Amino acid sequence: MREGATITVMIVLRRQTRRFFGPSYDAVFRLVFGDPAHIDLLASLLSDSLELPGSQVDGLQILNPQVPATRYRSKEVVLDVLAESEARLFDLEMQNRWTSDLFERLWCYNGKMLGEQARRGAPFTGLKPVTTAVITDFSVADHFGEYHHRTVAHDHHRGRCFAPVFDPGGVHVLELPTARWAAEDTPATRWLRFIGARTEREMTMAAQSDPKIARAADLVRQYNADDATYYELIAHEKWLWDSHSRERDARQEGHHEGREEGREEERQANARNALYEGLSVEQVARITGLSVDEVTRLSAKD
Image (cartoon, rainbow, N blue to C red):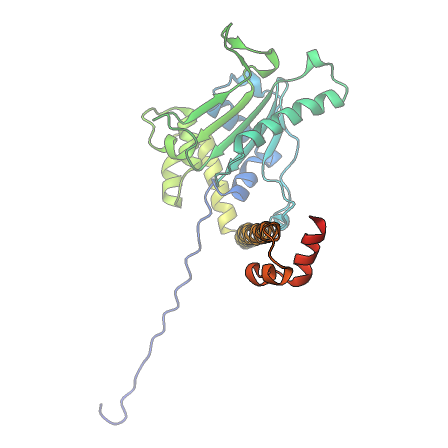
């Protein structure tokens, strides 16, 4: 390099690419479909995905309007959407993780909403049907190609619903992975493909064929673009990771304590057998690893 030459160094700062929180992320799902300002989107999702007549969502109101975003980091936050129309009650939620008690929990929610109507003084003959629906980001059944599963209280002998209050209520499960590859193109599959979108581009493509789905996609983009909401979503995700870690640690600790209790019970059983065979307390303590005092107490009990 010749003397006196000037060196120019260019530093290009690239904006960090933000993560895209799609419609299936539970907090985003709640923001889009749990806000009374977007009640028409919820009504469309329910009627289309559950294949209900439009009259079943007439007069729809959200019973638990979406909580402020600042509470998403709290473990007390509820992320399902409770709604009531003139014809029925709805409990809708987005489920991203499989749990072994999924169906038991859903039927408990269904029964609870029925029971609460009775507690408010409604006669049993006037109870509104309750429809519990969960959208899952995993498959729950091995029925190839079927993304919509319905369970109701059914009379197998007469081939009808056990009670009118369950028809067409009961529990519905909508599988996003199966709907993604479903052959048919229906309002239900369009909504589910939109909710199951993994990227913004995929979401945009899924929203092209329906104006209401396109509006829902615009809301998702707004929540991702708004700094306050975005970082609350990050905080909520961190809380989920932490809670899952605590649950895993608790299970592991419980397994460890259970193994230790099992070993202790085994040592005590061996000690009793050895005492029964006539070994001295000192011999039994040496063989089993129990203290002399522990063996003495066992000997006194026997």
